[in-house]
Image (cartoon, rainbow, N blue to C red):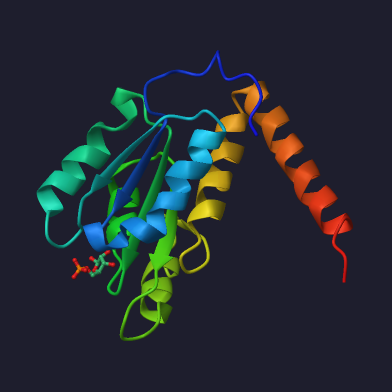
Length: 166
Ligand code: RP5
């Protein structure tokens, strides 16, 4: 899908964090989509509630290590993206993970209602693919090859819709 990616750093540009290993199935499409664009990521389980110290340390040190965008998925009382956004000025994209009890509405509302000053770009419930595509758009501002790859991706989407037989 992506065009030449040789000029991209091989070190991770995107951190994909999730609150629990139980979020992995939802988060995996983010890694896969970034891979299709040739973007390396650092994927980890870190929880705002269960590992607050490690989460904050990771978020604080990320920019220095070359990370440019965060993708953070969590369910229920989903504070991971907001906690990360509190300690970094890197863009943070939040994925509300569908929960068992409230079907993800709790995750969505926890994540999307950030107070003014500390934004989280929240995508749809379980919207890992769009989170990755948004990360690609952000990175494309500095990498023209990524912008070209995104345009080609959109063109294929267009062709697929136009080829639909109903
Ligand atoms: C959140 O609680 C996680 O992001 C997960 O979506 C949810 C449930 O976690 P587990 O109890 O499955 O570890 O922190």
